[in-house]
Image 1 (spheres, rainbow over the protein chains, first blue to last red):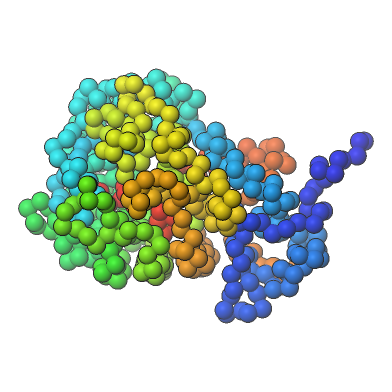
Image 2: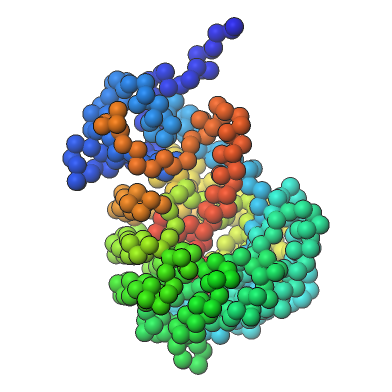
Length: 444
Length: 57
């Protein structure tokens, strides 16, 4: 039997360094231990402090070395690990078998939210039947090549103001998917006011899987932020619909907070629990800060949006709200590797007029248009700064797997261009240890 | 060892480990695929991305 070459040997036999993507956290409750967390594998382990010294001295037992290697804390070499990370997104894109499109059906709405992200882009703009048909043709000719499924996310404006277009598109794509033997399903990002059981029963046979609905805090707070255009509060109508449809489809609750209002959000969670909308009924809950759009697009009277993920108040607010959600038994997003939408090859946004973008935040910004359903997609590598994280600083940063250069849209809002990365080191330095502790405590 | 290393969260296996076992690799890759889809909607409480923009509506 031929002997193994050196590099073919199981690498746990060799001296191995700590991964670049391993964070070491102190454990105040046990000063003799530290917590290791891999941002790449999301594994966590509490280890005796001397283990760190033994890693350096290559003094671990075989079993310990194997355990730490399997979890991703020890690596063959840091250089090899970095090379692997350089190909990470390409590999994800190559492996992905699902095509996802966010379909902006209109830029109209029945609510008049104070902070509306559509802002000055809003209006009676609706996707025409011709554009809807062109989109279906685009899916047929371009998107479905070598794919196992299509997922659509109907979005707006308020997508349920375009119910006929939802039916038209989903019927056609469902037939197409059946013909080609691929999976199909769709979700709604809706304000929830029109999501009646009748609508859900109509859409479910066409592929409706779930709906993400927004409640911005308890009734009083929500109604101030998200009234109907008439000024009347929308909270009661939304909650009534959630109660009536949660048994038919998955319902995700989202909420958007500002610095001043975030402390009021736990009262919404208590309200949901008290009204029979607990964790068994609501699939997940997530609260996010309201971001400030730039002057060109923002709603003129709203100035309370967050301008950067690194704003100090956001650190406490996000940890606090996540704890409030988890402590009441609701599910929320766990800490995982994250890739900006612009880096995901098989995902795009279709605007109501058939133009294509990589992210809903970029819709209407001509410079970032990447084609149309009629003409197909253009090369957007340069305009969207793909691979902006492939630089020495990011590659050496322990947060790279949960960042990959951050959100291009946020970068654009901050500096008017996508040049450079949307670094969130400051934010993660202050929050990640606590998020990891929450994931462990609540077994996410 | 139990005293020196307490595993709190297993996470996902590293690619280097996956490559060693062909059959397991396929299973793991499937898991990664799902994740890739999910990533677009990761929260700003983790890192900021589409959910910030999508969920308000």
